Every structure is written in structure tokens, then in C-alpha cells.
Image (tube, rainbow, N blue to C red):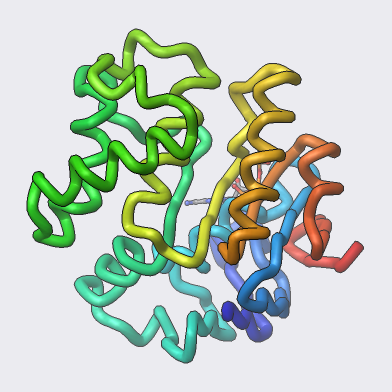
Length: 222
Ligand SMILES: Nc1ncnc2c1ncn2[C@@H]1O[C@H](COP(=O)(O)OP(=O)(O)OP(=O)(O)O)[C@@H](O)[C@H]1O
């Protein structure tokens, strides 16, 4: 479960350019929820995701993930939680282009100091689950946007984390690939994963079992 309590985040405090990226954000994500967050550009969605991921600390308020206050944890602990408890899918995929799909998928296991052999077994399993096993040995730079998206999801699933966090996962996708991704996220959610997605895509937004809208750093349930 994720609990955000009265979270504030201001950039350029006290300057003319002061921005209230998060303004009294309180929200709960329960295990098994499929949460979607929409809102105009600059409304604070990515900042919210970064607070949940422990990449950004709130100025006030807190973010509690399964009983742990990320802001009070060490950098090492935060990195460990990210590696083991969160499957993070980035808009620009965050993949190493000159490496193969398999090498990209090995990364979370290597960070967790697990063996390459176990990483390869898991990678095969996940790639088959996502119907992209034929891409295993392809370099990422040779893949289409939709294929890269699936590989990014595959990497997010490697550690079998219960929580999937995706910021604009449909950004680079056409309509068909977006529909496939919605289908996949719904399937993962039905299988028990908790999902939080930031999206500009209305079809994706409407797929959430809990839908939120952000504007000027404030969050509203839909
Ligand atoms: N590291 C930073 N330093 C300064 N300002 C920032 C920083 N990160 C975000 N901001 C500002 O905070 C506000 C919210 O940004 P954020 O990226 O969270 O919005 P967003 O809703 O995700 O936008 P988009 O839909 O365009 O990705 C914006 O005004 C942005 O310029």
C-alpha cells in the first residue's frame, strides 16, 4: 500500500519562478488497485511519481510505502526498495540501446547481486509471457517503439515486484500498441499487481479502477 499524506513540493522557493509542483497531495493506493493519473503538462504528475519512487523528497508531508517512510530511509535502502519492490517503467524506456534485450533484462538481477543464470531463466519466462521471446538477442536500438515499450515492461517485471509504476508509458506508442499495453496492464492487475500509471491517453486513464486528475499540484479523484 502507498499512502501520501499532505505532500508538498515547491521548486524555486521564494523566487519569482516558484512552482508548487505538489500542493497538499493526499492519496491512497491499496494493494490490487489500478490507479491512473491524468492532468495537463506541468501539473505535477511526474513529481508525484518521483516522490513515490523515492527519487524526490517531499518538502512537507510523507509517502509511506508498505509501512516505510522513504524520506527517512537511507539512499541504499531506497535503492534496494526500488530494485526489489517496484517495477518502474519510464517514458523514454531507460534501456541501454547498444545492449541486447537479454542484457537489459539482466540488470535488476545484477543490482540485486543475483546470478546471471537465474536472470536469464527469469528473462526467458517474462519474454515468453509478453510474447516477445524472439527479441531476446536483438540490440535495443534495432527495435520499434512498441517493442521497446514491451522490453521496458519486461524489465519492470523481472523482480516480480507487486507494484508497477509507469510514467507516460504510451508516449511513444501508436493506437494499436497503446491498446495492447492497456490490455497487458489490465491482465497484470487481474493477476494481482498494483499499478500506478501517469498518462495523457484518455483510454488508458479510463482503464484505471481508481482515476485521479492533477492540476497545479493538486490531486482530485475522478
Ligand atoms: N527538478 C525540477 N526543478 C525545477 N522545477 C521542476 C523540477 N521538476 C519539476 N519541476 C516543475 O514542477 C512542475 C511540475 O512538473 P512535472 O514534471 O511533475 O509535471 P507533469 O504533470 O509530469 O508534466 P508533463 O505532463 O509535461 O510530464 C512544472 O512546473 C515543472 O517545471
